Length: 314
Ligand SMILES: [Zn+2]
Image (tube, rainbow, N blue to C red; front, side, top):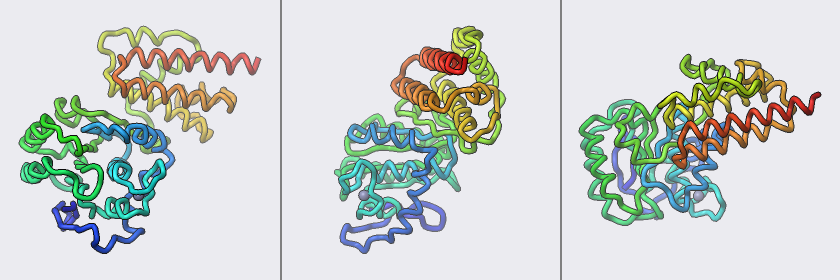
């Protein structure tokens, strides 16, 4: 059975492995947005998790098109028949995944209407079975904020009784749009800011200003992070993305905000280290380290780098 869009909604359809394969162009068109250079890091995390994929993965942030394409790319990665590290986008499994014709890949699509309880219920009998064609059954809830309350509760029951061959992927603009009980059962991967040139939301500007000041002067940061409950992991991930955005601005020669202005004084050879500092902080946040401690460590490393840069210029 395969998830296949019909009239804007998802329906199930039989697809035998010997069936004519979908065209390469159709399949690739669905997966290519996932290959955008801005998604290099999230793809890297997914590659690292492929051997032991989490039962539930959340993809938040970025743009809707990147979230959904990355969810399909993850499904392709888990079932690719090629022997490379990344999905080959050419084998029968990758082609079927991209064309939404894979017998083990299901897409419940909340992009244009809410996801109904009947769609969730229809999955349940499958979960006791082995995948039919691939190694893993992958169930994608595209824009899972469109889950009705009943459907979400039904899904929670499914998740309480895990089936080792089945992986779920939820995409949503922000994890706060989902039931906390669903979020807490999964891994959350936050995609980078969609448009680096777009200004930041106001709530993050305070954090950016504080980080910029600390990075250049070594003051004012810990007051902010020591306030109890200042940020949860989601908020902390957004602060890291603010840093990445500032680095992207620096690389593009834009002094768009206080942090990119600080970074603009840094020599080129230190920029990969900034990148690494953001990467490590994201890894720490994904592995449930206290979010404020992870941010403190990142801020301290950025401060050391900026001091090194200043010494090199002197
Ligand atoms: Zn493949």
